[in-house]
Image 1 (cartoon, rainbow, N blue to C red):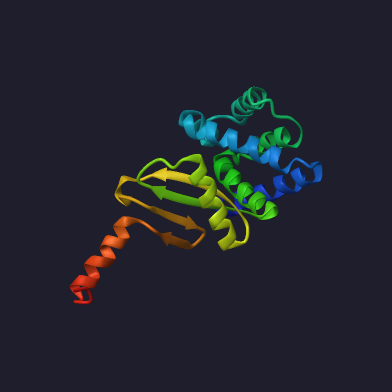
Image 2 (cartoon, rainbow, N blue to C red):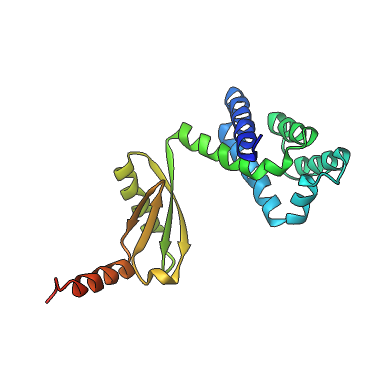
Length: 183
C-alpha cells in the first residue's frame, strides 16, 4: 500500500476521533507541532522510520514526544498506535492530510503569496479578504519573500494562480513589443 494511501487513511481516522471528541482544531494544531518538530529534527524522524530500530525504542521516543508536547487522549493513543504499526514514517503526510480535512470542514482555503518585500499585517489582511471574496471562503495566507517577483504579488490558491507581479507585466510588454502591438 502506498504511503499516500496509508497517510490519508490514518488522517481520516484521527479526524473522525477528533470530531467525536470535539477537538478538531486542538488535534490539528498538536499534530502540526509534532510534524514540525520531526521536520526540524531529521535524525529523530529517520529513527522512527527506520526498520533497524526496534518498535520498543520507537514507542519510547513517541512517549517522550507525547510527554514533551503534553498530548493526551485520542492523539496520544493515535501516535502510539502508529508506532506499534510501524507507520511513523508517514506522520508528516498524515498531518498534511489532516490539515486539508480540517480546512474543508471549517471552510478555509490556503493561499501561498509570493512577494518581493515583506507584507504589512494590514496588507496581508486586505489580501486575505479580497481573495476570500473571490473564492467565497475564508482565506489563510502563507507569505513567502521572492526577490524574482520584483514587485507586486503572485498568489496560488489551489490550482489557480493570480499573477500581479511587475515581472509578468514587463514580460507582457516585451511580448507585445515583439509582436509590434505597442508603438
